[in-house]
Length: 390
Image 1 (cartoon, rainbow, N blue to C red):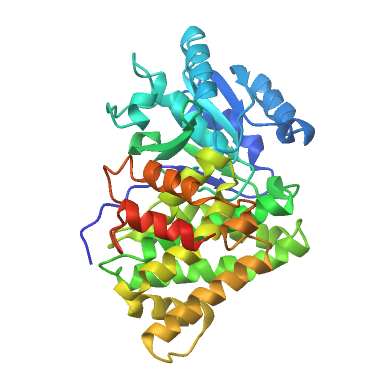
Image 2: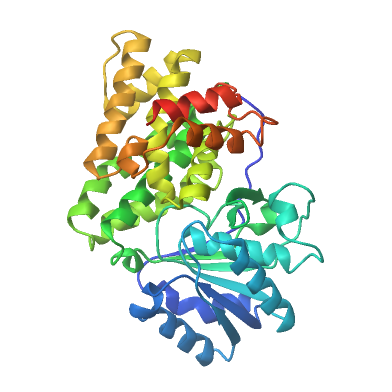
């Protein structure tokens, strides 16, 4: 058990029609001139954007809007938002969407508080502890960015996908209405389910182990997601299951499921290069790489993987290593059951050895860093994991 700090300042408003409270929430957090930030056409087609703008008008709150966020959100749009926000003296950013929109909003929020290139933060050349206040109306349960301190942005110059994280970027509030996720395509819902689980699994596979209560919370969250996933695949408008998964999304990435442990995050780092170069859906990239990572590292602590197999899938212990491998295989079967890939070929990528070397080199920052804590991974280790995932 490690020392830890747990900080979750985001005010959560959960339930049906809660987006109607947006005007009062913005006033509560002193939002006077708002930048509404969103993605493609879904918030327009569903009528949500029009409703939100009407609520703001009724509350006499001034606003501008900037759409166009893509999955694996782009630095160019972040910079456009920073320029717009500074020019128009925006004092609050409202993200309507999923993790990509929220991450992009955080990037804009960082940039509005500095007088240098925001990419310097993501590339770790500079540091700032300031972010413009952000609120969220969530439309996709996946990234957990609605309660997390993290933002991941892709720089089109070199197709580098990098993260920056500070507590001051945690949204001031998050409106969570499960009804707003009904119209998501199945692939996006499934990809989100993987992301939710992985946010907890990255923390769970810790070299130190977690506290017992943290383990139980993490295991319960993963079991809940697995239990409800097939329900929303079959019936996308099942409110109860959508609600369970939406709340799991937030809890999986606000720090709760990692208290007392040291997270690994290798699978995320490995996927970032897949997303940055090949623009794959984040959750799908994670499911494609996780089994290869797990089989590569599990012997560092097979007992941890065996516990996972027992607690998540009720697999009886047949020896720690054999139980661990059966647990990994069973997790991959779950991914397949919701039509998620379990290797790079199923992800749609048939990569040459040279392309895999490039992935490993970029993930290791040209050989200058290692990743992971369950097992520390060098550039060669990264190459092996990518290669085994072909």
